[in-house]
Length: 333
Image (cartoon, rainbow, N blue to C red):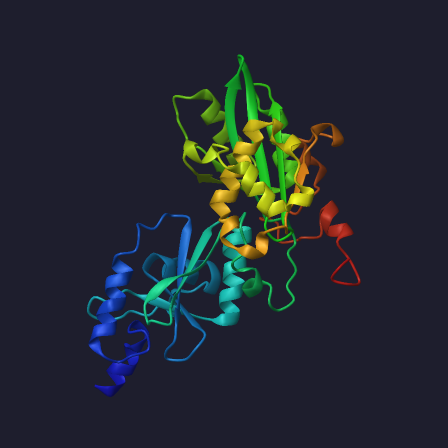
């Protein structure tokens, strides 16, 4: 009995009594429906600190993609879900692979001071801020940008107008542009490539709407993960006050507000990233206005043909322009 009690202690939040076990199962079963592109981790305090657990389909995925064997999956008895145990160093590697390479979202849950389960960390390809210290703790360098974009296509006076914004929470930079575009969305494509966007906030796919289908087809072609938001999130609202807080009054100018669709895209980003919830962001951000005339425009086909960036599917990371130039003597280049 004592061995069985220890064996099942990973489910009880560090206590061997039956009630915490039921509490965990109740919490686990009541979590929101998990989307296919999300993987959930649970930081367990027992049997030893620093162990992470994944359950059911997440355990299957980690076992297949990372450990390359189903033998790491443990089957629990009764109604307990099957699980896989991950050490902290392994977890950092897995999180990096999931978010940066496989373009998935991750959620990490833990027990708070009141011995209740809660969401501790979350991350996505365009938002690494909450797991930055974890996945880059051992001197691992970020090889590519982690930029989150927001795109809203509308029409004004019979012309197509696109409000675009992007944010890099690691570099504390926000950029925006409001631009006309053609039927192929060529300007938008060039801008998304230039800014290195990895994830994009946009409205859900509407198969009856040509603009919507073109946008989602473009994101798919560029391997940019769409993050669905509501149209109300693109309303500028209190963007003037929000930008004054994020940029600081010394760097804020009302001339920035002359492009309402770009400001709406920034408002969507600020709300999604919850930038105003952290006082450390006040005055820390810089606003960058993106001028398309400053750059040579490359579409996805041209970028691939020039072999500028490494292909995630290619094991040889040096056979591209970035790989040849990214050979530095110091971490700072």
